[in-house]
Image (cartoon, rainbow, N blue to C red; front, side, top):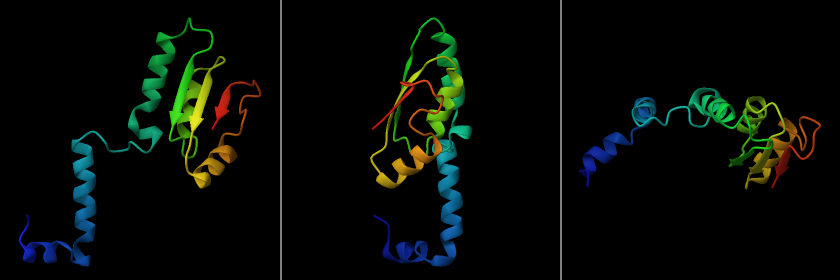
Length: 117
């Protein structure tokens, strides 16, 4: 346990920018940085790699668990240009509404390309 004087010091509001920078540096060191952003997380590369490996599969299935605003689903639809079935799950009603506004129920007009739950 940390000494109480150190805890009081660490809780100073003036040190919050330092804590934020240290937190970001720690996430980079653990390979977590950018995990919330499809563009910077390596997920697009992983989807393209999977699409190349599954090129003979007629209807590949992708799960987007914690679909948030639909960035991963959109990346999956781009990586698998033929009929891919995306199952998207988002427990937050607010985020689910944003997802549907961003992606829609059938973004390619080729149902059943996307199943939203």
